[in-house]
Image (tube, rainbow, N blue to C red; front, top):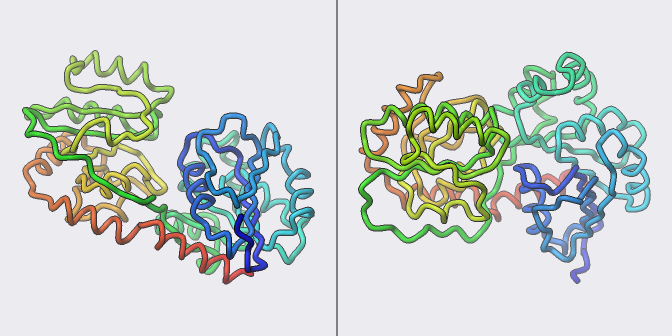
Length: 360
């Protein structure tokens, strides 16, 4: 076991390690952090449904066995008094807000930083009481020492809607884990191969993707990889449009991009995205993208070299964009190399190190 050569103690607090974007990124940080420089403890409020594994044996993992965030305050306080961390990193909006409200109970020497996983003003509309939640954010969120945003859009949302000073925010994108390899190119198919990877939920806009592909005048196969509450309604939509031979709900896959060898395009129908992990993985494999230009980090990933953005919500225009993208000669190797250079794990972890070192 490596012994830290630095006195920096880091306590990371997360509600769970279930399957999700914020949990994935916490696991990536823990599994890749340099434990010769940082003494890391990961506190999971409830780890009973763990999906992401912490493979770094030098990271101490504590299952606090607490039912929900509202009951976690005294447990986190006790843990912080035992560990005496220099930095507490919280990684979920409701947990971030909870710590902001009660920050006065923690020693002033402890820096509390929060990582945001979505667009706060939009996500707030889905809370138990949007008006009260918005008020709490506006009045308490500024007490956090630093807020980590995944995209420029997320940063501007906090500045504009919650009066957070830009100096109290920092943008750190989600990383790619190494190594990144493309599947072997398949023999030319008689149809265009389309893929999306997403939770089957309303905000992911899978229904509008299905309606858009139904308008295509070219032969295609569209594979949707993911699980969620909208499975039945999406299947009903597929059936109603007689697309059973064209659109397939393939369920969840551990390595989703191996399910369809050498896809032609990745489609994204989300109504908003903090920073889309699945799209990042797609371009890292050299797969061009067609996406609605929705609020969030999508526009920070897609450019003329790796895909097409569709403005507004026009599903006919999205179908035309797919056909245009199929006919465009994208340089898949260039797409892959650009993504890996910008978002590889070493680049992103160095940004975290710079942040931690600046706060100690």
